[in-house]
Length: 535
Image (cartoon, rainbow, N blue to C red; front, side, top):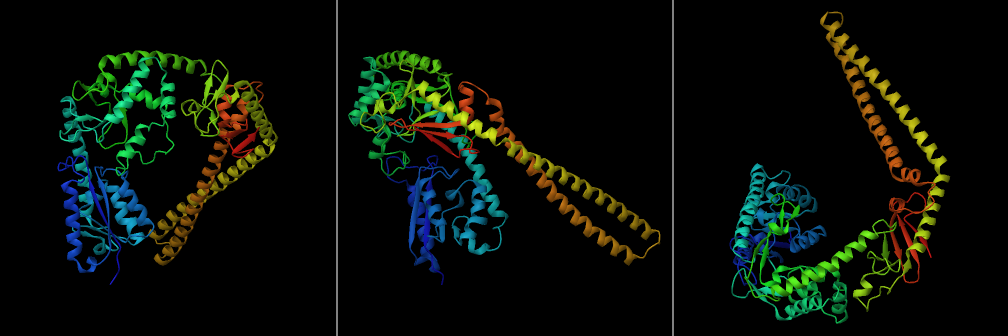
C-alpha cells in the first residue's frame, strides 16, 4: 500500500456569510476540518497516515496571496506532501484557470494526489485524463460565483459604510475592533496616547520630520511593529523589516486620518473591475464619511489645526522639490548605507540621507555627504569615459551591423529562391494532375510523382519557416542595439556639461558612502559592466 503524507487545506473568506465574530476561528473552519478528517478516517488506505493542516481564515480564494496556501505550495514543490485534501475546489481556489493548471500539470508532475470531497473528485480516478467536463464547468461556476459574490459584498459594504459601520478587517492604529459591538471601533489606550502626542507636537509647529525623529529617538514602535507585537499570528506586515522606523510618510498618514475624530471613512478606493487587482483612488468628495460613530482620539478642532499647519509645511516642502526638479542628479543619488534615495539640500547645495534625521542612532551618515557640484563632475567624467569607450568600439559595432545586414540579405535571397521553387513545384503538381486526368500518365505514375513533390514542398516550407525566424531575430537584435546603448551615445556625444537628460539616460543609481566612496550603476553594461566605482 502506498504511503501518504497528507496536507489538509482549509480556507474561509471574510465575505462568507457564516464568519464568526469575536472567535478565534469561525464555525465554518471547524466544519471543514471535521468533514475532511471524517472522510480520511473512513478510507482505510488514508486513515493511518500523518496529517498537516494549512488554514487561511479570512482570505479570498480569487488569488494565491494567502499565507497558508503559499506555505503549502512551497512544501508540495519540495516533495514533502503527496496528497492534498480539501472540502471543495472553491476552498482551494476560485480561479478555474489556476486550479486547472494545478490539476492537469503541476500535481501530476509532482506525483501529488488531490481530493475534493464535495465535488467527488479524486485525481487517482482520472490518471491520464483531464478530469472531465464536469470538473471544468464546476470550476467555471465557482469563478463566476466569486465575481457575483464580490459585487454583492461590495454593495453590502457600501451600505454599511453609509450607516457608519466600520468594515475593515483590522482596526487602524490607535483603535481596536470593539469587543462586543460588531463593526465598531474602540480606543486602544496605549496607541491612542502616541496619536494624541503626534497631534500635540504638530499643533505646536513641530515639523513632521522632527516628530518622526523624536519617536525614533524614544524607541516608540511604528504602527506596523505595534500591530505585529499584538497580533503575531495574522501574517499582516509579515514582510516588514525589524529595523522599520517612523518616517515622514508614517507620521503624515496619522495626521491626515479623519478616523481619529470619531468618524468612519469608507470608499476611499475601489476596484476597477470585480476581482481585479486594479484599484482606483477616490477623490475626497466621493468618500463615505459618517461622523461621531466611535470615541474620538483627537477633537475636530485639533484635527483642523493640525491640517492647517502641516499644509503650510507641505507647501514649503513641495516648493523645494520643484526648485530642484531640473537638477541633473535628482532621484538618482542613494545612501550607500541604507540604499534609500537621498534628499537635496537647496541651501547647502548637497545631498543627505533623510533617515539620518529621523533615526539619530542609525548607521546612515549625518549631514551633507557630498556636494552636488563635486558629484556632478564625477558623474560627468564617468559618462565622458563611457562615451569615449563607446566611440572606440564603434568600428567593431558598425562591422557587426554590416555583417548582420549582409546575413539578412543573404537569407532573404535564399528565402525568395525557396519560395520560387515552391511555386514551380506547385505548378508541376497541377500539370501532373492534368496529365493524369487526360490519360497521358497512369495513376501509379501520378501518385509516385505527386508524393515526391509533396515531400519536397514540405521540406522547403520547413526551411522557409526557419529562415523567416532567423531573419526576424537578426532584425530585432539590430533594432534593439540601435535604440538602446548606441542611440544614447549618439544623442549625447560631444556635450560639455552634465544635463538631467544625459544623466538619466546612462545612470541607474549613484550610491554615496560616508567615506565619499561612490558607486555608479549604469543602465547599460556594454562598456564597463554593471557598475563603475570611484572615490
